[in-house]
Image (tube, rainbow, N blue to C red; front, side):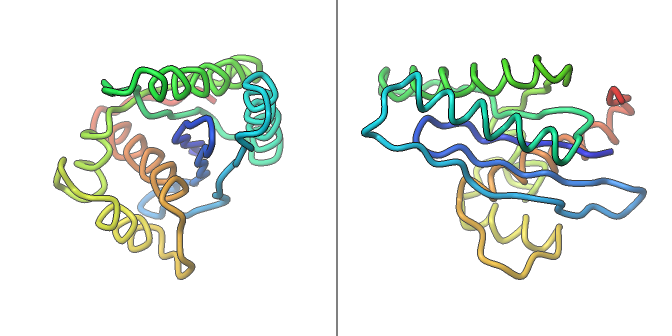
Length: 163
């Protein structure tokens, strides 16, 4: 199973692609998509769409997993994240990828065993689980964590991911 995990954001969108085969889970690709504050929103969303589309074509994931939008006290931030999520969901739809969503609490629980883990704990566990030596950016680690959460959840729930 190849899974594309996305941590959406208008300024920085993290992505991570993992492959789960039997007991082995490994990273195929990961990184961040950055957009400039000096660009119009539609350009920034277009960049996210274009880069995610390229990743899908290159990596050929079987599904897309994205973090659910949680309540945010800053309405402007919540709106921007919602727009980025929309760009990702649209991209996945255009590539006929089914999307799954998990809350930050579910992701942290799946990766660290503790739903209130901080970013450093998540980064550490992602590196351990995927045997990664390089330093991961926070959004990149979060995207990989979301993908890991899905493969653990799919296994526990015996869900079949579309192929």
